[in-house]
Length: 89
Ligand code: FES
Image (cartoon, rainbow, N blue to C red; front, side):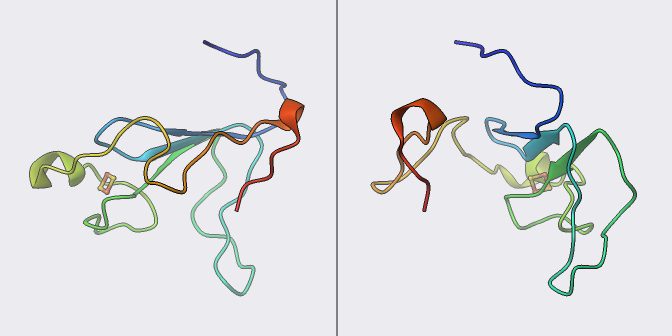
């Protein structure tokens, strides 16, 4: 199911066997709060650990056979939805 997206929010979408795609109003900062990269409307964040441009995806996941779902994974995963009062860990 696709939900309508507010224009003032960022979304994070895990792509199957690939990066996390972030769209919307967001900034990527280091631990000291300094900006990383240039502001863009969409970025891909590496989740395979093989990128040479971390935290951004450089496409290396395709070469390494990285496998991941496009959904939450693991025994502790659960949907975090604003409308049911669940909070994410
Ligand atoms: S997810 Fe693309 S290089 Fe890691």
